[in-house]
Amino acid sequence: MMFPLSITKKEVMDFPLRHYPGKIVVAASEEQIQRAIQEINNSTVVGFDTEAKPTFVKGQIRNIGLIQVATDHKVFLLRIHKVGVLDCIHELLENENILKVGIGLKDDYNLLDRLRPLTPQGFLDLNDTMTELGAESIGARNLAAMILEIRISKSAQTSNWELEELTQKQLHYAATDAWICLEIYKKLEGWGYI
Image 1 (spheres, helix red, strand yellow):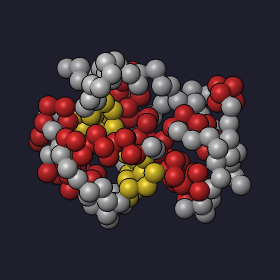
Image 2 (spheres, rainbow, N blue to C red):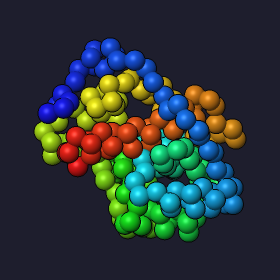
Image 3 (cartoon, rainbow, N blue to C red):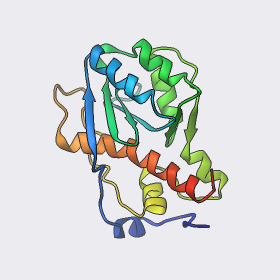
Image 4 (tube, rainbow, N blue to C red):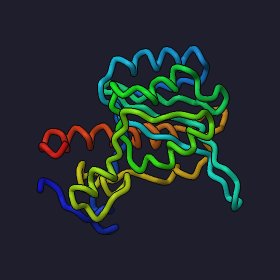
């Protein structure tokens, strides 16, 4: 094994704190999102994540406000809370020829399906992959530490993803979550585990 199968909170904290260092593209209008998807469609593997505005009332439904897609050269933040799941996004989610790599995707599927029914195709959940490899610690923070030897911040997770302008902290957080999925996949593939 090229990596540990479990990790403690203390071990995670020993790694350097990192966030996505590259170009972040925020797409909020239909036109911007369509342009972003055209570019994403040139990739064969992308990192994938979503963010939903947190709810603090039992039974209240969380709505996805942001879809993050990491390519080799940039991370696209698709702000869908105003425009919804456009046709081009729906096609990407059902495109089996573009591998979308995420962590803990079941929640994402359910929340996206609630916005617009879909049959997710071409997804790989790293939690499943790591569990099959015998890992006991899963989840974005643990996997980033175990595979990439970095620590990622989770402090913006419960922030409001429907703000008019996302903060720098939110941009870094959202981009990092999609980027680590792609980077972990590349590492595992390079080591021959995928």
